[in-house]
Amino acid sequence: MSDGSKAKNPRAGSRKHKTPRTDEERRARRRRKRERRDKHSAARQARRAARKAAKQKRRDTALRRAGTSDFLQRRMAGLMRFLFNWAQAVGRLRASRIAARVTRVFGRLSKENKLGAANIAAAYPDKSEAERAAILSEVWDNLAAQAIEYAFLQDLVADFDPENMQDGPVEVVGIEHIHALRDSGKAGIIFGAHIGNWELVAAIGARLGLPVVAPYRPPTNPYIAAEMEKRRSAFVEDLVVSGPGTARQVARALAKGNHIGVLVDQRIAEGQAIPFFGRMSLSNPVVGVMARLFDCPVHGSFSVRLPDGRFHVTMTPPLALPRDAKGRVDAEGANVVVHGMVEQWVRSAPGQWLWLHDRWRYGRRKHNKQF
Image (tube, rainbow, N blue to C red; front, top):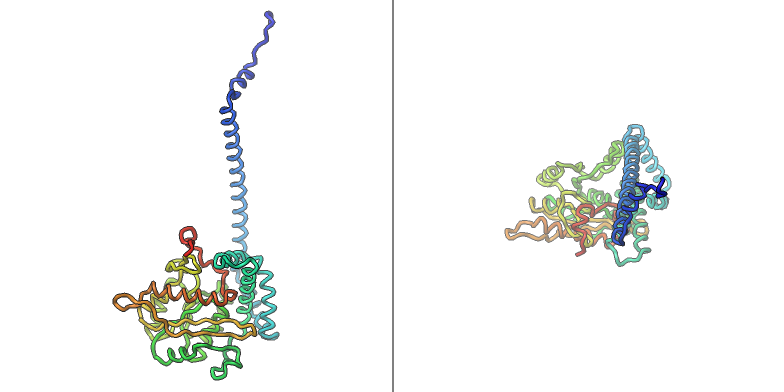
């Protein structure tokens, strides 16, 4: 230009105007940049998580479809029968040891292993890491032995001699209570838990003339379910499939004077909130409800696996359940007593209980407080 002055750059002036002039403005500008960066980063992470979840959902759907195919279900049932035949060929104790080694290896890779470790840690905060790991390892051993022993259950019962229990595979403490309930002519409730070999309790009861009507949840594989039902029917008077009508069927059986055998240690979504190992858990209320309706004797029974391969079965005397002012059984109080006994059983043999079940799932945020 003729006057020698330089033209002003409008962008330079604009940048100069936007440049923070105070420390507070600089901090605000940096904060806005961080917020934008964090927002974009969170959006990217959300997109990645959504893609990963969709991929996992597709994989799970494919696995479910494969698992429910008739071809694969038949093959799985055939594999189970093959394992039972193999176990009978090599013997119960040896087959149980081999199955335990395999189950420990593959069990560690499952999500149930992590769940079991968390449950044991919450129940036994004072035990060392090594002690809790030993309990979890024994849980897998017991589960493997339980599966193998389906092939030998009838043999175990056939070899049980109530007159000479010390030389047989099963010893029973409280056998007089079994005889008394059998001879009373009254309906009764026998509750148990997933401890030791939980099928053996009902089998020994039937051997002593005390068959039970038992609610159960069949496997999703119909061919495996049919095989297991056939084996259970040898010692269970009637099997009631768990579902919406279970309570009515149990009530009808008691009204006819039958005996009910029920495993009460698993979570029931609509159950009674009861402290179990120091944490609230929704628990099976059927014992207290039926005892109140029918005012029948209630016994507890469970089995423990002994180191030499034998079993120790306990039958308690009839419980003195709490009652209300009118003399009727207090259903909720009775269930507290029942689940308190189950906890005592588990504490006596923690490695033989099914810690792999999410007993405390519902109400974890509200009810996981200590007592």
